[in-house]
Structure formats: structure tokens, C-alpha cells
Image (cartoon, rainbow, N blue to C red; front, side):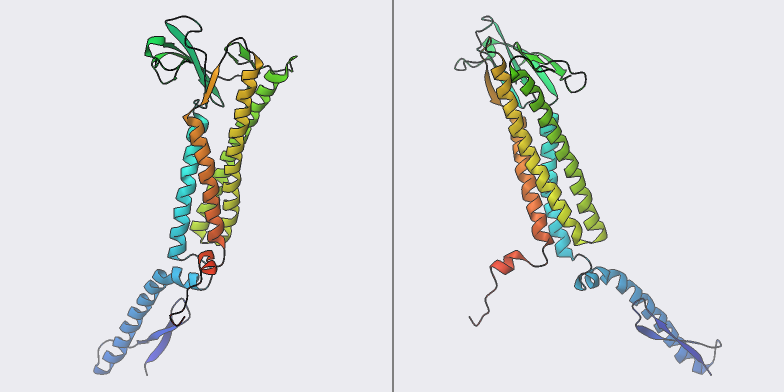
Length: 300
């Protein structure tokens, strides 16, 4: 008698009988062939299971399909663009440029300044290099002698002085310097908190892609939308700090203009909000496009 046993694959389905018997003999060819076929079927079944695991889990509602994963990666790329623009804007000092009249000091050189959240720079420019139609000194991109320092009121509480306009650690008789200090600190803290939310959103998206769980898209969308709003709010607060600086002293007339770092931050805020909205749409159990515009049947 040939003893046979049944082999099951990892899904519990029967692959085929595997028979064992003594080597040789004419009647052993059939069972040996069945055993070889069963083992081949088992190996085929395992490889099929590994290749179709994603499709079966997606059909059961437990994972992500390839189309969903592609859409999430595309939305994540949009959010990453916003993160890069935010880091570029927050890390540079070209938020605002302050320029007195080009003939305020002398007829050969003039002084201009530009600063951001953490750092300020003054630059001596040659009047001959400035556009004759421009009344103020600048732009700061012209060649000249530059001197940059980090703002120390974040660490030691020292005042920052630009064109005889200063920020005060304590409340002065005029509240403009005190207001400038607190607005600068508030803008910097909002930018830092927005960066923290971006990191948390990126972690959520990474978990959603690695664990194939759609639930992580909802906290990721919240993090990216809130970070975009905070970036835009930081930009508004910084602009108010610039206005407070200009109002602190009128000895030196200044012309101010926002520079390219502000453009990066503004675009970053908009891109982050759009990326968060895309994650909200991808986390819905149905397609909003198909729900709003259902396909018409051929008969209608």
C-alpha cells in the first residue's frame, strides 16, 4: 500500500497528494510523478501567494492597491515640494530688504540691509552700480562689502540695531521695539512648529505606505494643512514686525520691499495646504470625482 498525504498551501487550499514509496518498480512511477507535481504545485502556490498578496488584501479592504499607492506617492511629492520651499525660505535671510535713499550718506556709497527670522546683513554698495532710475539703495544682490550677524535676542536677549532702529528686550517708552521683538520671536516659533508638523506628516505617510493602512492619511493631512496655515501666519506676523521696525525711529527714511525668501515661504504654505487636501481626498472610502460626476450608462 502506498501511503499518501495531502499538502495544503498557505491559504488552506489543497495542492495535491504526495505519495511515498520504495524506489524503483513500474508502479511507483505514477505516485512519484504525483508527488513531484504536488511539490511543484506547492512551490507555485507559494510564489503565487507572494505575488498576489497585495491584490488580495486590497480586494478585502485591508491594504492599498497599486493605484492608491501611486496616488499617495504623488501627493507626498507635492507635500515634499512644500517642505523644501519652507526650509529654503526659513533658512535664508532674504525676507525683507531695507534701503535708505542712495544719496543719504554720500555720493559714492550707500548702505542697505536685508534680514530674515534668524540673521541680518548690512551691505555697502557703490552708487555707480545702482540703476540711475532707482531712488533707494539696492538691490542687495549687487556686489559690495557685506556684514552678517545672527540675531542674539533669541539667546542672550541683546538688541538688534538697523539704521538706528532697535529692538528692545524690555518695554521701552515707545512700544514699537518691544512689539518688534515679540513679533520676530512669534514668527520664528510659528515657522519651527510648522516644520515639526511637516516631519510628523511625513512619518504618517511613510507608515501608510509601509504598513498599507489608509488611516494614517488623515493625521498626515491634518499635519500638512496646519503646517501650511502656520507658515502663512508666520509670514503675516513677520510683515507686522517689519512695520513695527519702520515705526520705531524716523531718523533714517527707509524703503522696504519683501524679497525672494518670502516668495518661497508663501508658495510653500499654499503647496502644503494643497498636499494636505489631496491626502484628505485619498483617505475617503469613495472617489469624490465619481460621486460628483457619475458615469452615464450607454442607454441614456
